[in-house]
Structure formats: C-alpha cells, structure tokens
Image 1 (tube, rainbow, N blue to C red):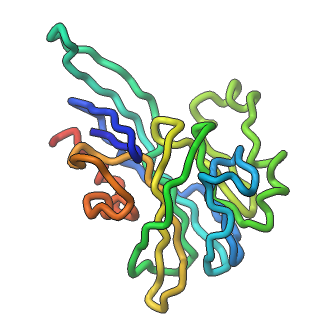
Image 2 (image 1 turned 135 degrees about the horizontal axis):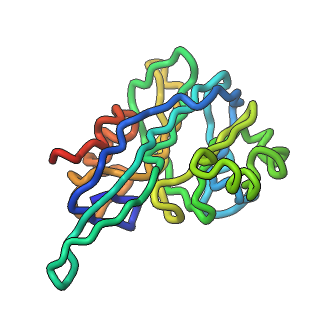
Length: 216
C-alpha cells in the first residue's frame, strides 16, 4: 500500500523506488517556506515561517518508477505503469547530523509540486524558479520534475495533489537543521495514519531501499 496523508493507493505488486539523488544546494535563512510553489503567503495549508538554522543546505529527493498489478472485481489481473514518482523531498544543512525529528504539519498540494524556499526570497521567485514551465514540460518531458534557484527548490509530489506530512530535524544542540516532506510509503503501513505515527518515522530520513518492497 502506497500512502499519502489521508489518501491511499493499494498495490498488489510494485517495482521499487530505490534512488536518492542530491539535486542541488540552496541557501536558507532563519525563516523558511514549505509549500506548493503556486501558493502565495498566507495560504492556510502551507507553512511560510519555519524557524531554521541559516546556512547552505543539500537538497535530496527519493525518486523512481512504479508499476503495479491488481485483481479486479471480475478476478482478472490488471496492470498499470505509474511512471516515475518522487517519494520524499528532504533538505539538510551541510555538515549537520539530525539527532531527532518532530512532526511539523500536513502540507497541501494543488499543482502536484512541493517546494522548500528561503522566506525572504520566496515572493521574488514567483515568476522565476517557482513558476511551472509549459515549454520545459513539453521539451524535457520526464526530466522536468524539479527546478531550483539559489534560495529554493521544488519537486513533483508522489501521486500528485493531496496532503503530505512535513517533519523538522534537530541537531545535538537542538538547532533545526533539516526538513523532510514524505509523499509515499511502502506496503508495510497499515490503517489510518497521522503525523506522529511510529510506522512513518523510518521514511523521514531513511535510505531509499525502504521503498523497495517488490520482494515483500
């Protein structure tokens, strides 16, 4: 079962999502935005003032292809290719180690994208890196699933629109040095989920192999 917030898609079989890629570096200040990049300041289902330790952050995404099969009501096996999907977007301050995580909030998505941006530069990127490009979507096809500038980055989100959990990570000194937004979980997750559900904790910063459940 691949879950995103309150919504679930149940898959009988799936190819794994196994790759975590380092997309870029961005510079974040003491106030950070986590939001669908189409949202302007003040939208209720986004966060526009997350306290973070300023500095250079590495941007990572877990991404890969998903195919599935299931049995329909007539007992026939059907197949579907979900294509490449982003399972998690995570930023961590360069040289830092996260000692513990705390659930921050559920974030809404309306354009199948999620961004993490320096708050002072978020508005200025509205007609720049935050903006979705129809031309790049056509010319680059499956390669256009993220974009960034010096102060922020967005990626595609799991199965698209919905609500996704955001977590904040702290170093040994109690300073906030990482954010993680999780879009997909593997089929070990059971029942209704909430942000502090212990079943979800490994997916906040665990290895990409967590999404490899093709052998389960």
